Amino acid sequence: MDYKMSELVAKTNVPKSTILYYIKEGLLPEAKKVKVNVHRYSQEHVELIKYIKYMQESMGSSIDEIKIILKNKNNSFSSSYTMLEPLMNTLSGGASGLEQYTKAEFIEFFDLKKILLEKLLQDEILQPLNGTIYTQQEATIINLVEHFIDVGVDYEILNEYVKHAKIISQLEQQMQKGLCSVKNEDNFSTLWKIMFDTLFNAKEYIFNRTTHNVLHQSLQEELKE
Image (cartoon, rainbow, N blue to C red; front, side, top):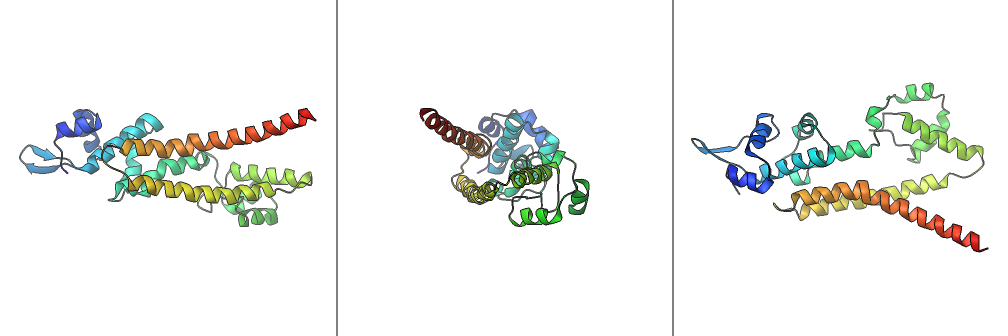
């Protein structure tokens, strides 16, 4: 479906001047020129504008950051994993802003036991970014495991975290595909809100509250004894 500029403005609630700026900056494709001074815009324009607006208002992304994200987008915008790049950066836990090391540098800098490092990698308790980038985050996890070992307590809880994290991540991926499958021109912004709020609000809330409630119940039972 093609839209006039006035229709595009109405659908996205973004001013004409801003839309033209997005086109000028390369965030949006050029309009289809029907005839002299007559241009038409596609559903892709609608989706991209809503995406840009959401990333700016809800995620605080700059135009330059969004431009990098959109640079290699594929033609299927709604199902493109490229569009999830902001999620990937956030899900990395801010590791991109930390000092980065190769595996050899990491072992030497933190004076680590290679055997323990290899075991934690094998068990996937340690998961360096892209399999090669080590940071203080990995060192913190190793330090935690060493504390478990020092006091003679099994760190099986961490292995269980890994197992359940895999299951949950697969469910999250299914959710993403499910959201894409019901996308239409009216619900695009809502679908992005569902994705972001589920991963960054609901998950933390449910996990932490569940842990709190279990511990609280144990405390209450202990006080009764």
